[in-house]
Image (cartoon, rainbow, N blue to C red; front, side):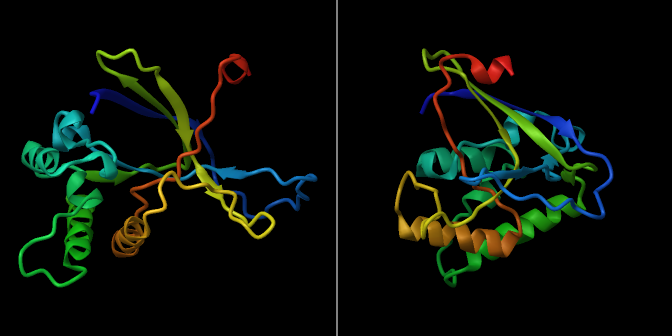
Length: 193
C-alpha cells in the first residue's frame, strides 16, 4: 500500500455532562446525531515513537505486513485489531488474546482514556504520493433505520469480516473499526464554515 502519515487531535472538548437533555424534535428528513466520546490513546511516554504502535486498517494488512507490524513494537495495535490465529486455537482464542492485550495496555498505562469527551480531528496524508489528503473527524454517531434500511452502505459485504469485527468488539469492548462516511468536498464549503 501507499505509506501514510496519520494525525489525530481533539478538536472539541465538552465540559461536564448535561444531566437533563433538552427535548428536540428532529426536522423533517432526520439528521444524524453526532456526539463526543472519550477516546483511548497510546501514551507516548510509555511507547516512545507513536508510529511504532500504529497500523493500517485490518483489511489492508497482508500476512507479511502483519508479521512486520507484530515485530515493530510489543504494543502495536495490530495485536488487538487483527489478532493472529495460532495452531491449536479454539475458535475465539484470538479475540480473547486481543482482549487480554487491551486490558494489559490499559492497566499498564500504555493506553489511557481521554479525561473529557471530544470530537477528534483526523488527517491522513499519503507520503510520496499524488493521492489527496483525507481530512475528517471521529465522533459517536447514532444509527437509525431509515425506511427499513440502516442508511449505511458497506464497502464490502463480507459476512465473515463483519462477524470477526463483532466478535472483536464483544471481546475487547472497543470499536477498532469505526464506520467511515466519505464525501467529496471540492467546493471548499466545509473548510469555510
